[in-house]
Image (tube, rainbow, N blue to C red; front, top):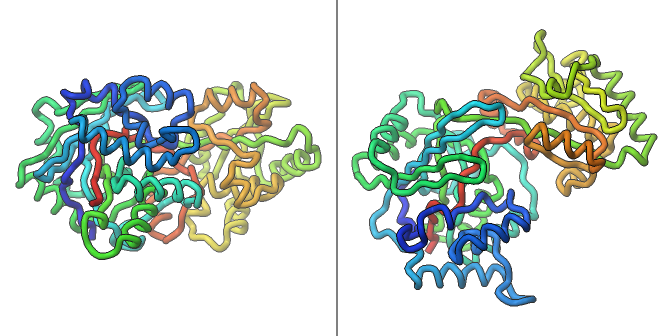
Length: 426
């Protein structure tokens, strides 16, 4: 059962900072140095200063600087602490990668930290040590959840969505349009009956982490470090119903380098593809991203290399090939395109180890078709595999089986901005 409670938020005083536009940022893990500099230049209070901190002086501790900035912003009145707890409804009107306009609706709250397991909270992707150490050091310094975890729950009766809809008839408390054109709107839910309705609607729910696995596992480590009970036993989440019509999940394509100078590995790749897949040449690169399974229900990939530049469709010859390669995994996992590609190709003829995959050694990702093509054209990568991604139902089945998907098996869009509200842990 999920213990979901309103937040005693730390939040921006929007009149003081000029609204959300100058102070919000994307999640820390999608920001490059140039974008960080641009965000920091927007306002001395932009959240990137604490969520992706830099040292105050050369050689200084960047985590201590994040904590100092957070305290300074409160002293300056840029951040205020709410005395009364509240949920915060977030709607995101966005354009999907395939050109549809949708609105995703959820709400921000404090969720009791639990061990992963049936009936409580489930992960769906693997994590790695590096990002967790960074987020843990930042949490220790700031004693605050700075960015929300994105999680899913089942709202089969529609009770939560009805409450959310009723609370969004008035003008929002804050609004922002991000660089992708997503319109983020935020409403404060102070009404006690509405708060109780949202908590009750999720009381029997199992939560599935869609984005933010590293942050959740960091929160769990931090809570155990502090010990006892208190606000540190809860973590900030944006909760969205699986039934929400605005929920979208898209694939992350895989790119591989290091083949141009390694003919032995390139030949091994060609031989494996010919043995495991039926190969069809496509009319154009626009046809590369597959749309789910083939017409007769088999896994398929789009394939392009930088040498021959012939767009191909690779259709798995027989599901038994994947079943044998992933014999230790449950059936839904053996039908996951990212897992099959990893087992048959990445760890097979390409010889990538778990460490190679974790450290992005000769491996890259792209969530955009055009970007993947551009990376091939530039010569940065030698081959690209275009995936179609996993439907929500398959993600649920894999999580329910207690198995974690390969990292970046899914791409939930849009991202939840950082800076909407913060969750103090002390």
